Length: 314
Image (cartoon, rainbow, N blue to C red; front, side):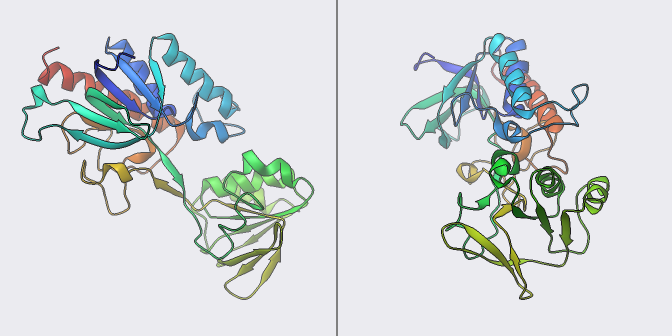
């Protein structure tokens, strides 16, 4: 990448949303750079042992699907840059849209200029916020069952959460572990009813509802999970699946965020800042899945192309 070049589109994030945006932007004959936080990253999809709800590709390994997305964008000519963006600004907020250039600063000190930005940084795992969680992170506390489940083969584990991720984690672990506790603070699950039914039919799965963790205890590694009602559940591992936190901290004061930190934007990806678009898990929407991320990326890229055509007279 030419450091003096002003890009048409800078895409932040190389998950399904960012890679989809790259494909559509390249097909619109725009100059594109995809900034990724880790080398050859493809987002959280790489953590999925099996993706079974992407149209036409049932039972696809998540890592392989992510690699296919990446190769598609790369083969069209999209360039990639490893770096974490931490500041977004225009030199003069009073500039007309036709002269607006976004400056994106990265933690390595580089600043990249682009006429439009598509932010697809995704979201991170929410934490329980209980005693022992930080102490035993990586020593019995995990946020990815597919990544770490094999370490607990033949052991006892707990999954904390009530959404589709938690249910999927419990099903995955039930094929590896002697015992799996599924712990949810509410009476009913937010996730798939069919997954709940599958879990109820598993002899080695025990579902505990209206239950909440109070403390994770252990010595060198996790040995038990204490609940707020006083019960102590003996486990070797605790898998936390209580939702996601959007990675939008660098966007505060740049675009409008809702009360939970998600960027306020509809399916077009258009935000409150001219030339700044979002796609994927960072935006306000009801369903956050691979298929919606890919759709978001396409829509955001089309919106960016229209913006460039209308305001920058390409």
